[in-house]
Length: 462
Image (cartoon, rainbow, N blue to C red; front, side, top):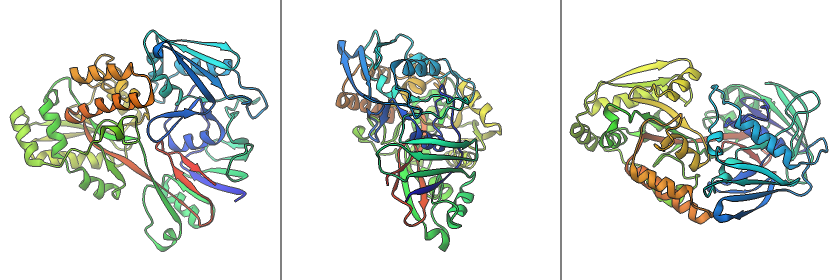
């Protein structure tokens, strides 16, 4: 197909210093820009704009080399100074909730320099193999003459762009794919399906449900596991869930499969630990979800002296059906003899800020989006860091295993080291584990070949 029309939730380009986990924005970014390194669905990273690297001093010094001949779409050669400017901008920026990114903490002791025009060096006092995870989330972006952040080094060049309406892209690389792509912002999955059925779009992403009528059934549907973790934070500082027995009990009390099937058309894979099977250590850990065992849960709650009432907090959106999922959890707790009350926060950004300030009641639904196992543990689990999303969880063995993993260099060794942490977090959970979503897309017959990455990015394969 020479011209492909892609229907997405949004159509926007972010400033160079912004990092995102929004699937629609990431899909557009990956067409126009390149990350410094690229994720695989095993949680490892492979070359992208950085073509290769050397590791010295036991993992304390990393030298990354920019791909030979790499140029922005306006012809400017990519040099180390562009990478350093991007890194510096991200380290000084804040997220969509106005909260400072954690990257500045990861790199607080690192010295980042450019030994040559084509290389970037990272030196750290301790071994730092997790720099690979960090650089896999950084995308190289430059603004054009008008100030729009649309200049990249990826396979497609931006020819025109109207924010939150459309972007016109033309292929400039010798890679498979259509000559032209039009990205259309069509909010609402039902509207995107309607555009496909009407022939106004060729492929649509984030559709959230399978075909329900003959017109939709004529489309070609696809699925992909997303590495996002939907879960409930547990208040481990005080109250019921300061008790490991109570944290295990709530995981046994909830029939997560029934909730997933009843509210989300079964589109998900039940969680076994704090990250998905797509993350580093996820497959190696070899875990199965904790079983539904309400009788065992009641015995544990009784032994821990938990009867409630517990406060369950929820927003209305993000994660999907958040309020209904929380209500189902409350019902499950009630069947175990634990009373609850639900608090609803309608303002989603305020809800996130409250979670960051540890205002979660006893239980609060949330999600965990980083593709990096290192980041999830560093931001949300480690009691040594006590970072913004940490909710009071502490386990000496978890801390020891995190320390080992953080100092480990080499793909196989890192995979095994992080798997050991994940197994311990399965046995002593910090959260109520729920599921990892399965995303769906659909295309008109003959539109091309597509797949979904673990980040939710729609990959156009031909």
